[in-house]
Length: 82
Image: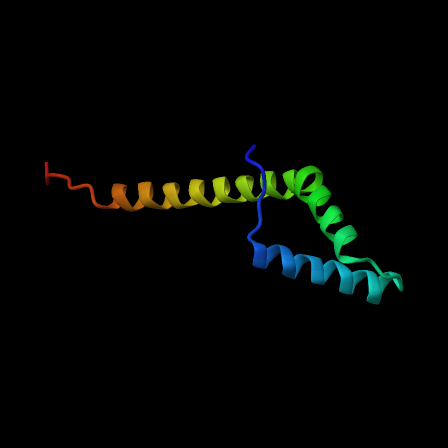
């Protein structure tokens, strides 16, 4: 699996979200370094579950779309009157 990498902007936003979560939900403070460290852990160790689910979802969607195209193509078949 390819490593999950976020842009600088995405990382900054994710760090802010983690810090806000710790403050609001856990009544605790987390510094930027610790939040970045935690985000890195999530990306490397937890992200794989979300990545694999996204692949499975995309596969299911693609499968459905291919079935629809197949059905549409069959509807276009022409038959002779005999």
